[in-house]
Amino acid sequence: MREKRAPKYKVPANIAESSITLRDVLRTTKDKKNACIVVLDELTDVHNVGAIIRSSVASGVDAIIIAKNNQAPINDTVMHTSAGTAGMIPVIAMNVNDAIRTMKENGFWVHGLFMSGDTNLWKSDLTGKVGIVVGSEGEGIHAMTMKLCDYGLAIPMDSKVESLNASVSVAIALYERLRQINI
Image 1 (cartoon, one colour):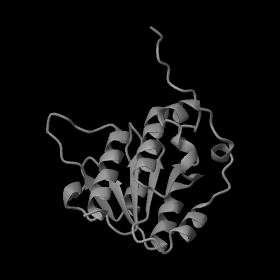
Image 2: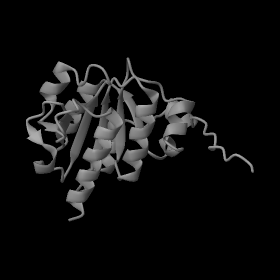
Image 3: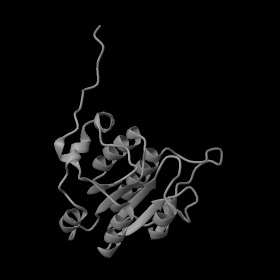
């Protein structure tokens, strides 16, 4: 019996050398009722980045912002983990705080995923134009970035567990958003 192998994905040139900017994305989502942008604040695990890209594409996210510095690269591992979806969504490398400020100036409410967030995810309003920010695996969201978020979202969980994996947290938040806009 032959062993089934996963397909090999290559990093598309449009990701490594993307000419799409946040302003471009904001122009295309200007009249969209429920636009969403995911912001990665210096994630270092390529598997998390790939899984977040895959969940973002699957849930209709408009773009992903990745930190310009100290960020896991978009490489073959990211492509493989994303099951090839990394070429289906704009991935924009830029200063995360500048991105959040620009999003807010364009009518986005920005929600940060914090272990000690002040708003229970299930009681939050994720309809309309939203940004969802997730921090690095070890450090979480940087203090300055936290201050820029309009809301700190906490995902309810059993007290035996301190936190969830970054990609799992983003997927839960994205699907809660999807549930809310499809009610």
